[in-house]
Amino acid sequence: MITIGLLSLVLCVAVTVVVLLFARTGMPRRVFIWLSWIPSTALLMEFLFSDSLTNSLSYLAIVIPLLTCVASLTFTLIGAALIASERQHRERHTDLLWATVIASIPGALLAGYLVFAFVTYLIHKGA
Image (cartoon, rainbow, N blue to C red; front, side):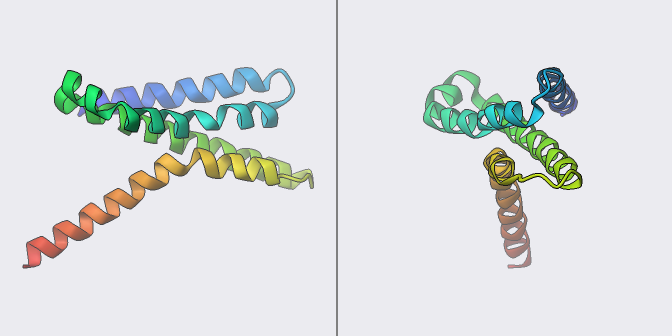
């Protein structure tokens, strides 16, 4: 469990550093839009290759989708910060908003699954 937490922390820092390094070029909005597809594409690829991942990694196969969801939540926070900064400058931000929504899909799926699992647990515990 500590390993997953440490990997999640390293992943969050790495994603933030990559976005900040590319933002130094003067176009953080465009870079974020380019990079926002990574979590959704990674989750799709993990779904497509889930059988081979499960066969080779066994129980550790869940770590990769969890890290993808953590990266998605990090991208969502970065996108929200960019939208907030553009609101102060009164610029249009519809493309940035859509990029943030696309980046948040894996995190939203994880949140939905956690709610479903918790409700299912409560139903079975009470029965």
